[in-house]
Image (cartoon, rainbow, N blue to C red):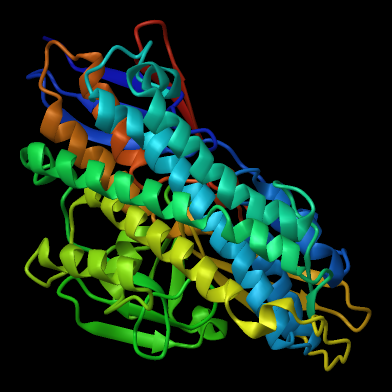
Length: 475
């Protein structure tokens, strides 16, 4: 057997564009597998010169999957840079929209994107290993899954006027109050949503029991864990401190999100447009960490809502109280967060201030820069704006959820390829497992690619037999 290179392009059932290259040696073993994020979107440069108040409408166009996250992070950054903290009712309404986003995004990922692998099998025929195949195999479950996502999208629509790219949050508050009829309409879908999430949790528990061998060898590795928490280290998705723990669960840092630059730096590799964030004090790669559902559930000591908190207690037992390192348990953590978001919708709607019309702070106390941070479904999302005296944006820095997980996704791809691929015969199911390592993180690649300064480029020229003829580089 001769050495060979396998390319998976495109990676399917994710948002955005990526490819994987797997390099195999002459013995049929994998030398290394690489995840290449091969799209580039320069939204940071696009935003320079725009007015601060435009940012909640511009930045959601980065992505059609998680526009609400960018919408709210931009509004929070606008609050900060303009010195206009929103009234409490406005913050409650923003958080309500955010919970709708978490429900629809997590629900879609578990049932429609990851679900075909879990419910139909990693080795199922690709022609049916999709949402259409799910519909044929279990139409009742598929309809429930669609309705769960619809409920989350309806919350976004009721508040923001449309399900995608809402027009709702503005610096200092929101532009629309919630009516009693709208509140009651949202509440009418609550019981069905909770029931569907319980079904999802049951499915995941059953699948984990039957596939424990895979779970225990599928991209299992130590990292730090990073995410937002409340005062008592409870799961927090809208507003709180950032907490970072190490691979043993020991707290390394707890800090105000506005000070993120004191703790995070970004590393660059020449084979990806996506940067690699890490914890400054430990350096790269020792300081890498994971975000998103697995990161947050490892990082949080409790959850404020009862059903989700019971599921978190089970989660904590999976590794005897230590952080859960199994990449496939991203799905378990994702469902726990979905339950929390659904329960928290009712908590918010039961708050007397939710119907208040005190929704905008028009006072201003501007400063040169501001930071807005939110826990998007995929992880911690940071918007940082520098502003001149005319309230125009001079500079933008975005550290997006998927970027934080770049090292973990790359490590997962390499680990799964080395675990499951043994030549000379390479099956489609083996390659699908490599893709599933990426899917577990639910990446949003359109959001994540950005640059400050010149990006490094390596151009390889190869002949018809794949022999390297010439390399051109730009550092």
